[in-house]
Image 1 (cartoon, rainbow, N blue to C red):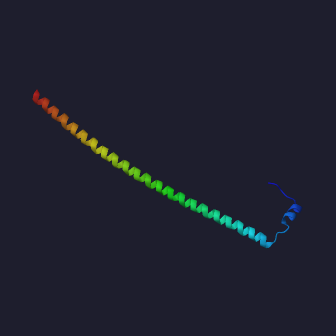
Image 2 (image 1 turned 30 degrees about the vertical axis):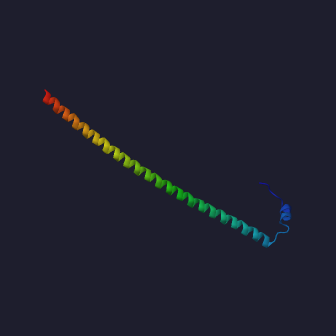
Image 3 (image 1 turned 120 degrees about the vertical axis):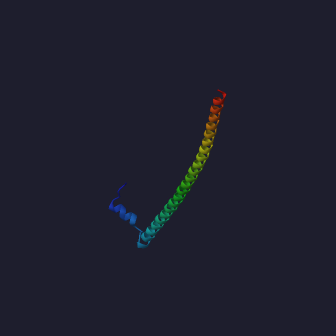
Length: 97
């Protein structure tokens, strides 16, 4: 950061008055307020996106769970049928002998 001398500061301040300084401060304040508002809006949008992503993940997990339960029921039925068939085969062999 470059330093200026007192003389340079006095020269730069020529033509400044309270009204000009006040107007510059108010303009700076307005820019800060606008920036704050944009940041807040951005944070709200980000929060909405996070909530939507969480909802989608939850739905996906529920669908995966439903599919796993359906698959488990099919597997259980196949095992039950296979057990029944093997038992029947054992009875047939017993009668054969």
